[in-house]
Image (tube, rainbow, N blue to C red; front, side, top):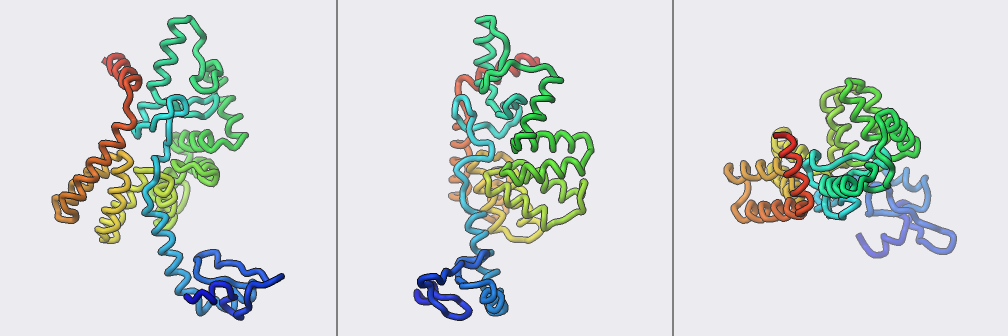
Length: 297
C-alpha cells in the first residue's frame, strides 16, 4: 500500500483535508473511506483483502502471551492467584476472590483477638446465608460481572441452562473471561442453546485472549483433533503452559513424544510453567494449605 493511499479515500480518492475526514475500515487497517457510500461502493473489491487482514489481526491478538491469567492477583497480598480454585475464597459481600493464604491469616488474627469474622477485603461481617444472598443480589444489581457470572454458574449447576446462558452472556459482555469460557461449554453441549461450534470457538478465543488457560488448552485440542493443525495447537499449549496450566504441559509432553516439537521448546515451556506455579506460592499460602489438608484428615 502506498503512503499516498493511506491518506486518501480508497473508493473516490479524495484526500483528507479541511472538512473531509476519513474513517478506517472497521475490520482491518488497510483502507480509509470518506463516507458510507464510498465504503459500500468499494466493498466488492476490498472484501477479500479485508477478511484476510482481519484474520491476521485476530491471530496477532489471539497468540499474544497474556501478562497474567484471567484470575489476576489476590487483592490483599497482590500475588498471582493459583489456578487451583480450591486455594481461593469467593466473598459474596464484595465479589472479591481472596487467596486462602490471606483468608487464613486474617482468620487467625480474628481468633486471637476475639474479633467478629469479617471479609478480608471490605471488612463486612461474614453474613448468614440469607444475608449473603441479599448481598449477591445487590452486587448483581450494580452490574458486578463476577457476581453475575457466579449466579450464572449456580444456575448451570442446577440445570437451569437458559437462565445460566442469560447471566453468563451479561457477565461476558461486562468483561468477565470465565463467563466466556462457561458459555463455550453451553454451546459445545447444547445446554440452553443450540449446539454452535462457531459460537463455542468465539467464546473460547475471547476467554483465551483474556488469559484463561483452560480455554486456551481447549483451543489447542480443537486445532489438533478437529483442524489437524499441529502448529497452532502447540502455540496454544505453550501460551497456557506459561500461565501455569498443567494439562497444557501434559499435551506438550505428548507432542514431544510424537515428534511435533523439539526438546528445547519443551524444556523452555517446562521452565516457564514452573516459574508461573512458583509465583503463586508463599509461606502464608503453604501454611493455609497445610491446615486445610490436616482438617481433611
